Amino acid sequence: MKLFCKIMILLLVAGTSRSADDMRPANFEQVESKRRLAERIKFPEMTRDATVIIHCNSQIAASGKMTKTGCYAKDNFDTAFVAAIIKAAKKALLKPAVIGGKTKKIYLQFRVEFIAEGEKRDIYLYRNPGHAENIEAYGYDYVAAQRVVGKEPWQKICPQRARYLLRLKAFVGEDGQSASPTLERVSGIMPTLDCQNAIKDTILSSLFTPAIADGYPVPSAFVELFSN
Image 1 (cartoon, rainbow, N blue to C red):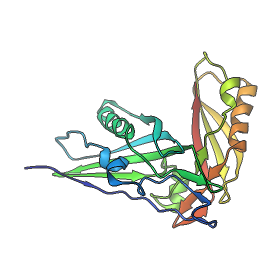
Image 2: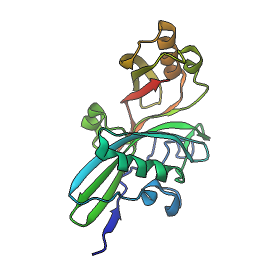
Image 3: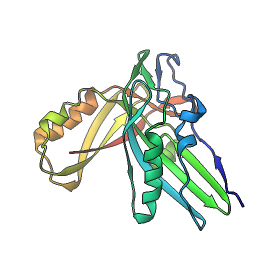
């Protein structure tokens, strides 16, 4: 019997205290259906019921194109799902983020949830990376803060050869202003203090669209990984 793939997109159409034309986060929905990421993802073959959640990030150009998409596979079973997302992202399109009335290139964190139950195949997209404290405050499908990608001065100061992976956590207010960045080492070396400060300064000087919950901007924790 032919399998039916029912694609559901649980996304908030974000509003803010400013006008919709002045500031808005990047959006998966408001583009033609054939360019939507959810429409392009092909559900991998499965012979059993399962739920798989894949965490991803991407840079969304001012044109809405997805670039530098990366996803995390926690084991070999996840690799087919990661490949399906990355393949779909190459031709997907988003409505780009807007700040100050201008489209901006942003760093987007998102999750894709695959659910196989009997012959049903469901795909859910969430514009957030699933940080527990934000989910506890705003629910499973809040829209995470999105950072504008600029000159990225940390890339010139941090080491090019020695391997490192750092986890940055900051606070982003409902006005899109960031504060209190902290760093912790995930793997590799702990870079120099100059590198650490350059990463923090990058965050503090970046523009953000704030997190959105129930259609309103809200304060949130923002986490981003930095590596070479």
